Image (tube, rainbow over all chains, first blue to last red; front, side):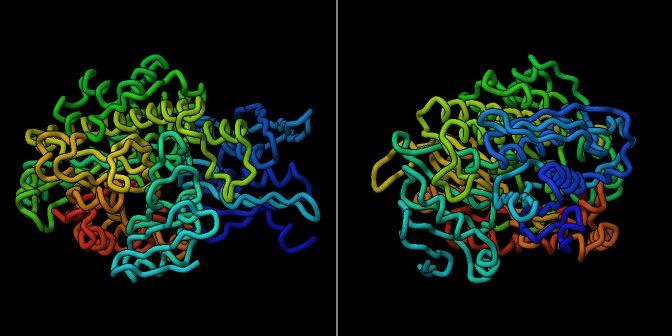
Length: 145
Length: 473
């Protein structure tokens, strides 16, 4: 195992926004680690209860769009329902006809003021996005903060 | 790529490769150093390659790397040949600044400052994942997006005079909320009347220097030590969702091949997709106007309660920092309607423009430039010169130069609070980590940014203010 793959994710320098790389042994694992990297900018997920199960299904015409839509789901659930994510389970990425489909389950809790998030992510961007699936699994994402 | 120095504050990249027009960067040799360290120049050249772009692709003095378009980017497009791009507006649609004046002086608020700030902190919801106090139905939210600040005034938040003193009079008439996705509305429903987090803030400020007493007087600013209130926030999750929705819709419609950066995705202005984005973006712009209108009303309530009165708390102005709109400009000697994108830039219309309210028409519009946390902010006046040099635009803030990550490594929120206290500035925040990330040292020098604007003549320095109380989301 390379040094990189021992880590789930790492942040890189970016003037205005936040840039990270996520690692793993499969596409599913790197996508999950990208979720954890994004969440780490907003709250400590270890402190969030595992009380609510939230099924998630997103689609994308390519892997980049699939990843953006998947990460956006965290922001959507936060804004619309105050849902704070603890972890991702039952993750599956499949190709159906000419699109990618991702099914997963988010575990977490609704924030009724018992949690204090520490930062904000406004949006997931395509800027400098990289998705490697050949020799190794790695994604790079810049998020607007 | 050759960066050519035209004069002390103007640099140009000549047309080369696929560029349709040259790129012009308004900056000083000092600010240029940090611009050169990131991808600002490369991104500005990419913008110059877009179809239908007019005259030049501009970068304002606070320019820095964005995604697709640089922050501080200003570009105008021909209505027939040109495009509209969600990445040219940004994710936080109508992120902007509202400034209220008061008739209180520093000595009046000194003893009550802590109570004032604490009450504002209680009255204006801020932070991540924080819902607002308003419980709106989806139908009402659509009305908010249709009418903007007008909706707020009709429902008892503020006065007609506030509307007059808001860019677009607080409402873009092009808004059509029926184009908003369900997800955008879901995100907007809990968030009207919330400040948000990140770089958003609410400050109680005092006038520190008056450069042009005559214009300052027209803006309602008359004395050193006079207390002002500045509100900096945007369209929250609703606006972010509109940007994401249309980036995706445009990708699915037009594909991404041939784009140097996927965030440059765009649609012809006159196409159905282009029009739908414009109408949705306008709806998000209106949400942000209503958001700042509601917050301003609550701030006045707090002053009434703590200071005994909110009389004289007139709005100076409210400006957009992230927007696309149709304006008439001089293009090579002819007046022509174009689609202007301002991403991290402020409109800076000079005397005479019909878009600015009568009360300011003889002196130019107020341009409000917030500094970073704990540093000065400025009020400028728009100029005729800006209409010639930058499609009537100037800077929008200090502009970051250090990553949040690096800022967290170097600074501690608690220490910053203490340092500010020693300078007579009180700070309230929902997050120490957020305070560290917004450390003033992570930003460019706002005094230098404003100096460039003033010396070039794209925004005339009128008043400098410094904070006495800061509420950070």
